[in-house]
Amino acid sequence: MNIFKEQEVRKEAVFEIAKRIMTAARTAPKAKGIDNMVIALLKKDGIKEVSEKLKEMARRDNLPDFFLRDAVNILSADAMIIFGTKIASTGLDPCGMCGFADCTEKNRHPDHPCVFNTGDLGIAIGSAASAAMDNRVDNRIMYTVGQALLEMRVLGEEVKIIYGMPLSISGKNPFFDRNKEELIKKAGQF
Image 1 (tube, rainbow, N blue to C red):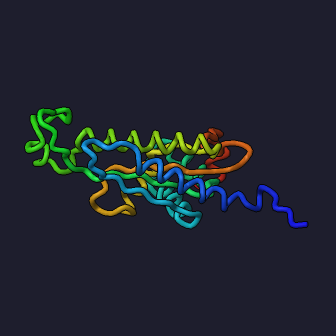
Image 2 (image 1 turned 90 degrees about the vertical axis):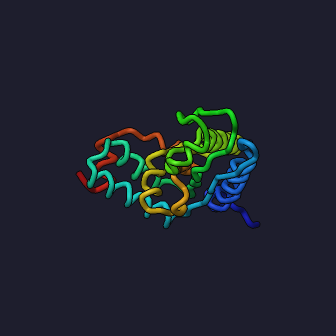
Image 3 (image 1 turned 135 degrees about the vertical axis):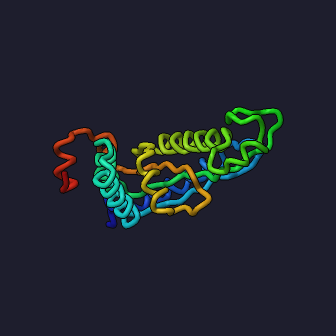
């Protein structure tokens, strides 16, 4: 009799669920139907690279401890979804919610996000987190991961805002570990 224990199919399951999570993010509503989202999936080797980058940034820039914490915690992920947005005006008139009078003035500042870019990203990530919850996959939204990915230019030059969502199927969510001494020991630094 062939028996497949849960541990043997866990990685396969997390990738199938990751596809559903990415679909939930893609189909989330976007302002004026304009889609500036970039969504990608990282596997173990990519996650390790991001972890190393976070450790490097923590050392180099003397960043808060939670960068190191996240660098260690993401190593427990079976997969990690990354969500980014390009910066582009939606052309709504009147608006000015970005702090500029209108989109023409905002466009003179191409790195300044349109509020709808960040709003759409937040809605998509919320939809993704809901899909993860519906499938009982442990996750956490991490801006620290996004900072490393931006520096690595993983999603290209046009993407200016990135968040990461590591995924794990285990007995305990590993992305909320807080024991500073243990994390530093695991990171092998400081």
